[in-house]
Length: 199
Image (tube, rainbow, N blue to C red; front, top):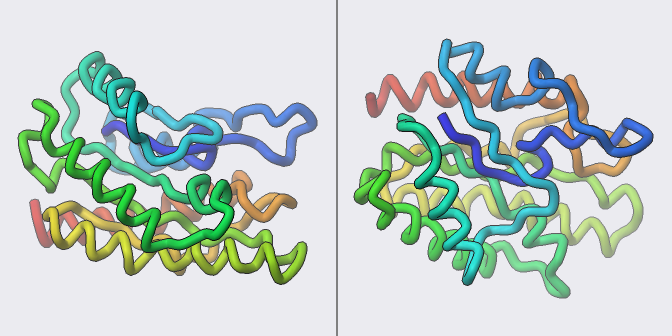
């Protein structure tokens, strides 16, 4: 399994003094892989947005050098919302749809949607700092139904984390160690359901 995401996939530790990375045993991709007895490649990166332009080529290069894998898990969109002057989940959804189309054209997938797990990001809580910030939280949560439509359209596996209660660090964005554990637990349940429905 390859997990392609942002800092919440990478395992950024917002509670550490220097913003270090959580240990392997504390990050959700590695916890999930251990649960199923899989090998995983954690390709999370701090600050990553949904790839477009030149970054699509970088994504292709990453796919080309990965050993054979059965599933690509994609969880992105939070940074796209946060970096928008007027955040709009529907606009971010359009960007994700272009990326999904690009993924499915890659030789590793050849249009096989069931090799892709699209994850709608977990809720954020920067609204604790003010009403203006709360707008960003609402748009992050709104990615859930938007991404569901994309997954259904392209036949992807889907997990909607937008309604999950995940413990967050003081910044209201990054998972705590317990947050990673709980996220992995919920995702394992959802993935087990997916594999039963669509082996």
